[in-house]
Length: 309
Image 1 (cartoon, rainbow, N blue to C red):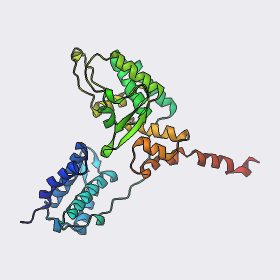
Image 2: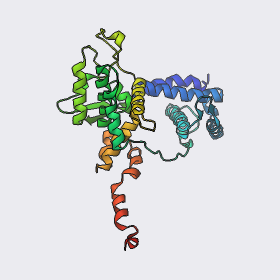
Image 3: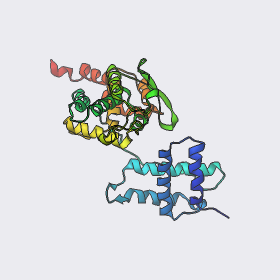
Image 4: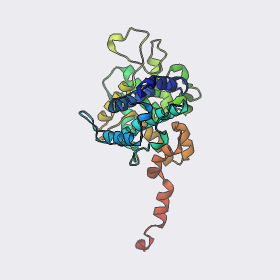
C-alpha cells in the first residue's frame, strides 16, 4: 500500500533526532512547518508533490496572514521551504519518489541589519540591575547575565541551560554546546568573571544551574529550577527600558553587540565566526558593512581632498 506524505513524517522526525542529532526545539519547528504543508496540500502522496504544487504553496505562504502577527516574514517563509526541502531529501535517500529537493528555491531576502548597542547604551544597560529595587541576589544575578551575554556572545538558549560546573572561573573560559551540538570555546572578561563570582557568593541553593529563579516564596527551597529562555528575554527587555534605551533590546542584541565590538576593535572575521559558533562565514559577514574600519580610513584619506584645498 502506498503511503501518504504524512505517514512518513514521524520517520523523518525520528531521523532528525537519531541520525542528525537535532535539538528537540528544532524537531518541533520542523514538525510545525511540515504539518502546515500537509494540511494545506491535504496530505498528498509523495509522487503527487511537483513544482506546480510547491509554486502554489509558496504563493499561499506569501499571502498567509496571522491575526496577531500579520503577514509571514520572508525568513519565516524560507523556514517552511527549508523544512520541506529536507523532508524531500530524506525521501529521496530512502528511494521514495517525489519532487527533487533541488527544485525548491528559497525566497530572496533583504540583507539582515544587525541591531547592536553603542558604548553609552551598553554601559547603562549593564548598570541597570544594580539600580533596581529587587532583592540583592536578583540584582547580582541579572548583572551577571548581562555581563556574560556581552562577554561571550552566547545565545539565550545556551545561557539558560548553563551549569555551574561548566564554567572555569580561574581560566576565564569554558565550552558551550550550541546549534547542531557544535562545541566552541567562549571567554570571560574581567567584569563578567567578577559578576559571576559575586552572584555565586549569594547562592545557598544546591541547583546545578548557573542562573536560577529566586522567588521570595521559594527562598527556603534548596533545589530550584533554572531561568527559562523566555524569562531571560523578558529581564533583558525590562532593563533596557529602565536604562532608557529607545529601541527593542533582546539577548540577541547583546550577541550582535559582542560581534560588532570585536570587529570594530580590529578582530578578524574568521575568529569572530568561531567565537559566535557560525557554521558559515556568510552569516558572520552581516556585521562587516557596519564595522569595516579600513573602508572608513580609505574614505577619510582619499575622498573629496580637492574640497579641502
